[in-house]
Length: 470
Image 1 (tube, rainbow, N blue to C red):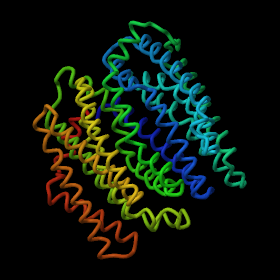
Image 2 (cartoon, rainbow, N blue to C red; image 1 turned 120 degrees about the vertical axis):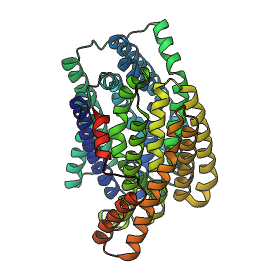
Image 3 (cartoon, one colour; image 1 turned 90 degrees about the vertical axis):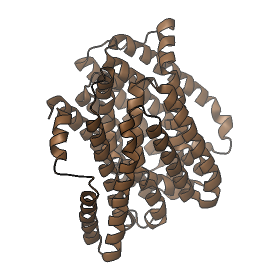
Image 4 (spheres, rainbow, N blue to C red; image 1 turned 180 degrees about the horizontal axis):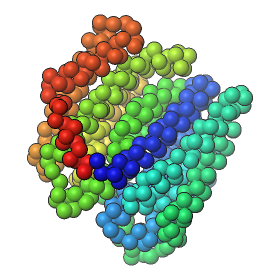
């Protein structure tokens, strides 16, 4: 296997595991330390801030990775993007300071947004450094940059919880301190190991060109940011903070289950950029990657549902397990579609088919918004999960149908087969055994037997994967 690829995958996976571990730790400490109302308010504040800064990126972050991987001058790209984040970040925070009138009836929520936003601004300022490191495939360095905030915040929250010092005021200052430290460490590491001057530079012509290159991606960012968190915002503002606390807990665990995808996705952009630039890709290899991703996605969903009720109710004192059983099942069905979407999005992105991506995301966004508006008032959290699943299905179908490589159109059939294997193995195991450990082990055995029977795995796969990595 290619040594550099192994190192990149290992570094990226390690930082994801560390970030997810401390992310889960923070989420767990907050969920058990606060009542559902305050926990919901913290999540609502984080949702508003994350959505705002995702939109402010204008999609330039992904364009920067592609430009650097393509061979563009990293110094010039860094200077322009640094100017962008400083300018837009300061502008947003200035507007936020003047925006108290919009939160007249939500004074506590406004304070949380204001102070948590200050910390996330620090993270936003470090984004150009991280994207340049990713573009030149310095994934080990990138891993160090990405873990600082979560490690500091997670450790500090555990200490506060141990000494019974948890309060909204204390966690706000912990968030600010952790995010600021991540910016400081990122600057130090970047200067030491990459040595490109970090100087914001305004050049009207070059900045306008960068914005034009990112323009189709701006629409995608606007839509994906709203798509990812519209259900949270709708539940938080229109239903209740309590229901948001329940939904956000289920959704957070669902996000954690995408860890394998998060490890693979950043590696695909620079490598697919080179493959599709030279038209040197192999169809059979691409199909094998899809099949492997579908097996991983369905397997993750199987484990998530088999362990959910007894484990989550045990660790949360019965607060978030049984009440979220239906929600997590619906969300877990989205996993294979997310892998398909990311795979085709990466191909479209490196092929500069940004307008097609935008059109697909517009349709997806419409489906999700309409679904939320119709379903959440009646079905609440389950309605939000169904709307999200519907949008994932539509997006995966559109990405597959509009791709220019006809041989990849069978991807959805692979998805259906692997999902069916996972559903049947889980159902049979739960019907046959009531013991958690026995039913989980049995479901795994059933799953891989069904994959063999449906020819989704074979003894030759290992040999072909070795060729792909090399």
